[in-house]
Amino acid sequence: MDTEQKTEVKNSIGRVVFIGISILLQVLWIVLMVIKLNEYSTYISLFSSILALLLALDIYGKNMNAAMKMPWIMLILVFPVLGVCLYFLIGRSDITKRMRQHFEQIDGELEGRLCQNGDIFNKLENENIGIANQAYYIWKYGKFPIYQNTDIEFYPEAIDGLKAQIEAIKQAEEFIFLEYHAIEDAQSFGEMKELLTEKVKQGVEVRIIYDDVGSVGFINTDFIKRMEAEGIQCRVFNPVIPFLNIFMNNRDHRKITVVDGKVGFTGGYNLADEYFNLVNPYGRWKDTGVKIIGDGVRSLTVMFLEMWNAIRKTDTDYEKYLPFIPYQSEEQGYIQPYADCPLDQEHVGENVYLNIIKNAKHYIYFTTPYLIITDEMNRELGLAAKRGVDVRVITPGIPDKKAIYKVTRSYYAGLVRRGVRIYEYTPGFCHAKQCVCDDEAATVGTINLDYRSLYYHFENGVFLYGCNAVGEIKKDFDHTLSECKEVTKEYEKQGSFFHRFKQNILRLFAPLL
Image 1 (cartoon, rainbow, N blue to C red):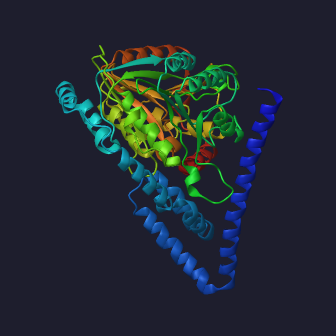
Image 2: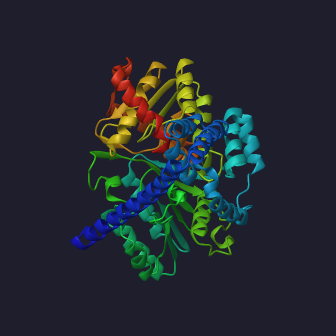
Image 3: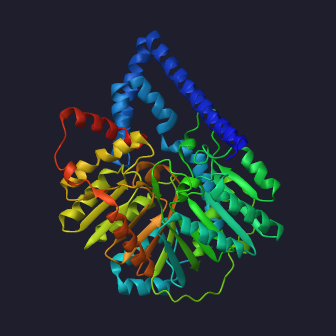
């Protein structure tokens, strides 16, 4: 990056710092006002205490994960004024009601664009009822069908996925859609940007979505102006503003590329240099992705159109982006791209993982950059290990966020005592989000094993069964494990009381991180 670009990025980070301070001051002002009122009147103080108790009981009775309840209940009961104020400001699920209704409206307009082929589902049901149940769940509650007639290629290194994307973009004739949590206007995106500009001149429609928080360390708000000056349509998801707004907690963590509705890409990597080892701030970066060709691309296209119009409603004719494209695949397996939205009460990303764990018979392996899991996930991983399944989890050897890394390690001991084996990727930072099970099923996507991915972010993934790519994913796990250090034995014994106390504090507030 040249000096001008570095200055722009520095200014962009400064913008977020200013906004963070502004929001913090607003919260402090509200809390101080309530404290002053409590001091002014005994009745107001008594009302606050009763309200805190009733609110804690209400939270306890809510249909939500227990780990999400406990931090709020303890905060409200120990610090009633602060806890009640914070909960009403940022804790209530109905705060995002307007945004949820907006997404529901867009989803309603897209309804019917994705349909489940009954013959495919019945065929799968006859082959493997457990996998069919998983596919049914994703279709019923995520509205994404399972496909055949779709080829999928797995990339064990992010740079291979990027090269394949560039080659696909070169062939574009109608449209190119890019949706990424983070885009860096540097070397990795530079070649793609030049190609996108050239494609615009050829009459190809190009659209880009990026998340404001995800890209804040990489680009400035001038990025949109520069893209649109080249004819590239560009939108930022959920811009950070200097006003208290709980929806800012929900980020677009998806990574999607669609070319002409024929070819699609997704995986763990963003379009920034560190993901392709062009720079190495955290040692060697490990990431993976997939390319989809055929019928299954349709689901990725719908995901992009949902987000594009949720940001600003402009499309009226969706069908021109969802044409029927004849394709003949030799792949005999099944592919089901799916997405997860944090605005509803259905945690598709977590439930897909849980269903795979429940179905595991011989082994199940995970890679995740962060391991901050719910009691349900903890229990299912342990239960699988107790019934004889080889359960392994790979986490980074070099952290990108030291505080989060400490929280991740705080989960090791409990898992190890249940029989789960833990590995750390010694060459650097393992950012891949994937699992493989019994040589038959796998997932690749954007969904970490942490509360942010499972509860707060817009995410996407691909569920695979019986595909050749499942074998390639298993090979990648075997290779990655050979580069890892197994730390299972180091966490078989409990640490000191003080050490466990610190971990418990971190674990308690992990759902709010």
